[in-house]
Length: 145
Image (cartoon, rainbow, N blue to C red; front, side):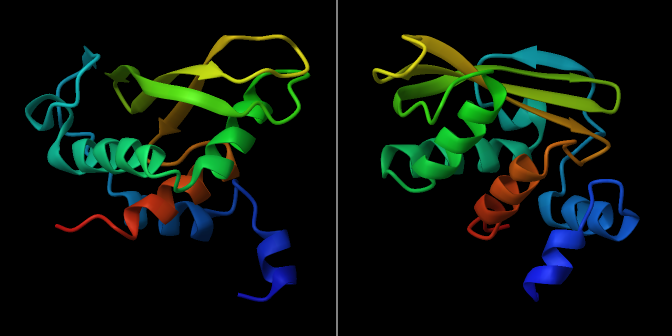
């Protein structure tokens, strides 16, 4: 995709939303839930695989810079908070909204912030944050059905 085409992509662009939904394939047929464990019976096998892959990638230092950029974008004033450790906090589904929270411990940073969370929110299969969508689409390339 040419740079200009990427730069013009908008979260409100319906074609973009369809591409994200088709790539992520989040399961909204499950009953509402709140869990702190990765459980395919509760959240569906696709989301369970995605979350396992995120944690595996973190352990291998893959996508660490993406996670740090997303973290910095969610904490006002934080300039690139390097993540020292990360674990799953809570995953909730309520209606058409899925929220995923990862608890993080940060290395020394400009805000002297020790602990934080990375929050991923999806409404109807798409996050309002393009960085989240891009990160999850990258992760999904390695998910085998």
